[in-house]
Length: 428
Ligand SMILES: NC(=O)c1ccc[n+]([C@@H]2O[C@H](COP(=O)([O-])OP(=O)(O)OC[C@H]3O[C@@H](n4cnc5c(N)ncnc54)[C@H](O)[C@@H]3O)[C@@H](O)[C@H]2O)c1
Image (cartoon, rainbow, N blue to C red):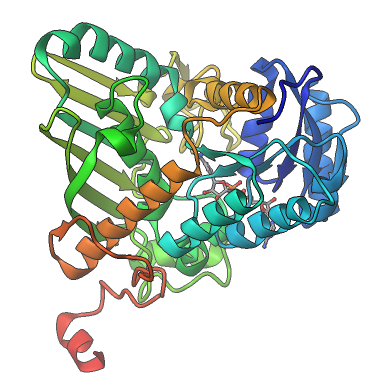
């Protein structure tokens, strides 16, 4: 265990895209750590993120790198946040761990964005590499730090579960109208479609709500079975597949080989009291509303909670006579600029990034191990793969199930739901 750190913890950000900017914004509300370095394959993008961090005053003289090893070796860097696309996860973590194992660099910890890997083999490899380098680790699942979940979970368990018994049903959904970068749409690069991209959040939020504060969901909830459905509802239609081809040239043809833009899964667990409990997770890239919608419900014998991110902090109205520019200044994945619109005033706080990074940096600075660790990331990946398998085979999957080498058909670009059944048989 490292001794507690006196100086601010120095953070190196690997990857300079969308989520890196969200994390940097969150640091405005965080004390005891500073952004000291950024990295991107393009030095210009790394410099842009470094300047953004300086402008927000969450770092001084932030160094930009195009090389991961050089960032890890920077003496000011105490911990790294891995924020690159899913298909780079293993190679990026390997590059970080190699510097540490060889003794060329020393770090206190590594934090890795969701999902931990594109499949179980990758997630396990990431966790093994980090353990092999002797690093403390965090799985970046922001939703289990979101105030709307942490506070209501405390209340549910303190006032409800303590009197009438443990909660039995968590319903969690995440929906928006589709991702922002081309690689998300490439089912091989991403590891699938919306199930891999968003259900990791909804499933972990569900496990979190059903688990008493202070307990590890993987110890409290034993998986029993899962059923699931995946579908291509919107983006496989001619018009939307053509739109994708135009906005992201070179992306796979969604008329013939889409990734799923709808996924639901029903997981049954047995909880620490021996009671059956259920997580219903539903995710979609086909929701065209004001913006990203996160919703959560928890039901217990004499209590319930519900939260919906689009309730927002306020609403604003812009009339049809105003000319508007497209933006995401009201909320993430905003779809319109006119009419009555919800506003989330502080998105990094509302979605959990502030509490997430506050917790992880404090624990790393103290030389400890955050609770939401890469082990949670592996557990979530295993459950997600079981959902893909259930959907693909149209079966109920019972746990334990060995999915060590399983790669979903969607991720192999071998899923063709819009092909007529007769044609499918002929090509089978
Ligand atoms: N917690 C959340 O809610 C949330 C939200 C969005 C994204 N994410 C996760 O964050 C990660 C990054 O997503 P994003 O939205 O920032 O993507 P993005 O496309 O906006 O940015 C990705 C960044 O990685 C860089 N990059 C691309 N290919 C690379 C390669 N081969 N090697 C190294 N770097 C490369 C890009 O230049 C860019 O700087 C993904 O794993 C995604 O699942 C999490």
